[in-house]
Length: 223
Image (cartoon, rainbow, N blue to C red; front, top):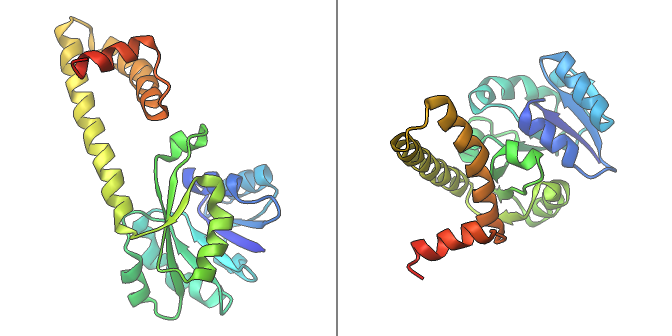
């Protein structure tokens, strides 16, 4: 299978590296140097024009949401008749895009997770929407390297990512306040949070917290 990835940023790079090895990859970016660098890394073909999608069965849109309305009209003339166009932009509703571009076969594949953490090995959750059973099978095969692939409402991705972000922002604010009360300087507070918080959160989510964190858990639960 030949697939295209439009976008060579963090998500495009992550996707290119996690696609099955037997997939032929075309990396498309307006910044040709970025496309070439990523294509060399994954053994793909680099291009800086949308015409490179010709012959691709699946086209992944790994670009910021605001880019899509202007990108799709330029992309459409170069697509194969049955090409699957995959919207990965969390904030853009695929149904609205499909209404604007009815000749395209637009589906959603969106990730609950942070690309930076996924690059370091943490799995995301890939949510498929607006797919047929056959398309679901194809995308589950292609995207399984990112993490579990499920079928659900694409809106749930934005809600989940927003919930996590909001709680992490609140936690960071509370941490800053408590560390300020201990008398730490602002630069030291940043170091303390950056060094300690991710490790504690990872251990909690993985269920392998050490004795210190376990003691904190027991104390907070009143046990």
